[in-house]
Amino acid sequence: MAEDHRAWHAGKSCWEGISDVNSRSIGIELVNPGHGFGYRPFPTPQIDRLIALLHDIRQRHPIADWHLLGHSDVAPARKIDPGERFPWALLARHGLGLFPEIKALGSACNISVTDLQYDLMAFGYDLDPNGLYDHKTMQIVRAAQRHFTPDHITGVAQRRWSHF
Figure (cartoon, rainbow, N blue to C red):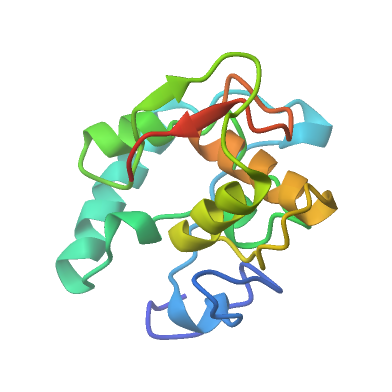
């Protein structure tokens, strides 16, 4: 599909308070059986082509690093792809997206739930800070963990991103 056409690739989704992600994004679908069908690492040739494609797209569109996202970022209640085996760190090393320094903070995150929610919302996740570690907060924490700490997906904030 041409980049100027709209697709329903993300479905019902939200990023930075905008609920129509499909009209503001370019969806790239990758081949992987997924979590229910033998989820495995993405093949190197596929990721190499993705990196080339993303660089090509960025020559035509001014896409900020924090706008290179997965379905799980924009629809964390419904989607878990591309998942924890997607090489976000590798893309960041190629100048595509963000993969911040992680600081381990012991067994639990030492910030308030409200501050955690504001941090996640400030980054772009669809969250209204209410001070409660509710189901939606846990889903968004899991989405952020899939993206930024793929070796640690619990839904419990035990590490904090030091900078974005």
